[in-house]
Length: 95
Image (cartoon, rainbow, N blue to C red):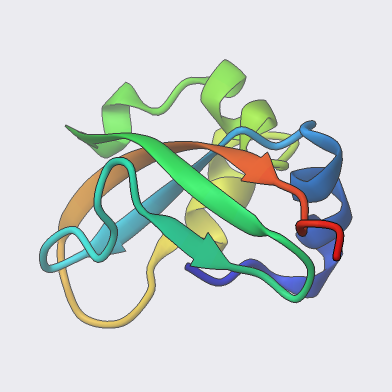
């Protein structure tokens, strides 16, 4: 799962805890970890929702000021199904 460059610091700080994606089918699985440039995110939940179910709280938790701002960038490829992905950041392990 990739994040726009300007959102990555907020993901790492824990400020961003979810993402809305428009896909044909889910591209992530609960409990799996996905690499970022530094560390990983671990998916806590994948919930199908509708665009009308996206609230301002979800938009803010996704790093956007409003629902319209979120929807401008939510679509990733083909598909019409909307998913709310909840996750937490896992810092890189110290060696």
